[in-house]
Length: 176
Image (cartoon, rainbow, N blue to C red; front, top):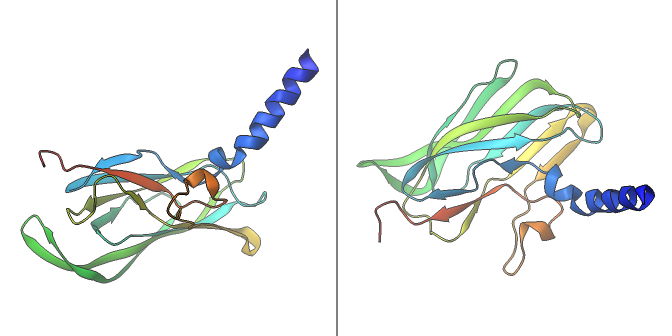
């Protein structure tokens, strides 16, 4: 009986390993036209090596990015022009942070951490869709995990080996 239970538990862990092993967002839903705190959960390193860099690509329609500094990590904000100008509380905004990079840290393969940023989800984004934030996790010895795969039509994140973290967009609060 114990042997069967252990075998069943091992099969369950192998079958769901990817679902628990990837970089994900803590809060998985947010309304458009609001501020959203994106907390990226990094559950491990790469093949036993510690994570030393976390890069988050900011998707179109996400503006006013403010990353949270982390003790022991350098913070870099890569700025550039947006694909178009967005209205940010009455102010036209055509450029800003396009990528956030935390580097120089040392997150052991057997450790867990979170990397956060505050963003504004513009009203140009469509409620009902999933907005993906591609993440590259760099580790010691040149290893990397590229969490950048976005599901094609008819696919889910579970179909992908390296899914980009996503947030389901909800209708604007007070919107129609």
